[in-house]
Length: 316
Image (cartoon, rainbow, N blue to C red; front, side, top):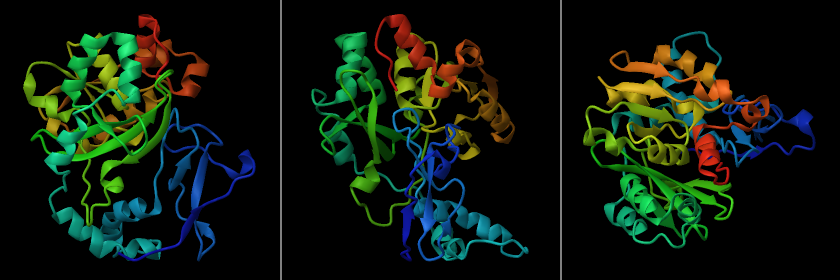
């Protein structure tokens, strides 16, 4: 794959930052710059500095790969396309025709062996107790990594029990605050990895064909909500903009209830029209109506309110 030179724009004040395309927070988003052209790559290519509440980070490499299909479909039109996108056409066409890559079972199973050094699980046990923790840890197959001391791995396991990848997160074990994020396939430096994400918790799909699917944005929310409301099968998109047809395709002929974060109701409501038509959708405005303006700015979700009721700490 061609190599390009990019950098995050150094920012001095809020004037140099933009509204985040994921969480919508103003003056929190730093864009990548093409060092050769001295210009921004795209308005959504960059990093949100709200790592605890958002964590959005779209790198140039990922952007160019995702835009290749656009270049193919529109190459016959008089559309101005970044030449760097066109240089990715062959690569993306090849990756789309290939099956998803996966994490070796040995690596995945090894991550499930210990939990004492897992900050997220330490925090969660203090809130819900040891017995409940054991159940939810096994249910969602929560892993532990040595990437950073105390790292949690939220494995993306599809309906065929294939591990697509894992989101690696470091939490503060005392207050549950998210501190760092990375991807298992990136950390492992697996060559030619063809990443095709799936919903977190998708492996639970066939365990009960009667229960409705409750869909939230973050993995931690799905885990906590599954304890409070076990009448649903809780899954997570892994990001605000991951509510898309390709991710929901396996949920065909099921009832899906969407629980958007505070301030994100309209975004998800507008996306419903582009989702698969063979799914029955309901969208909850519970969090949207309950949230204060401050909580909307902070991106509260249903897990925050559950933890408040339980008397625990706010998890972000």
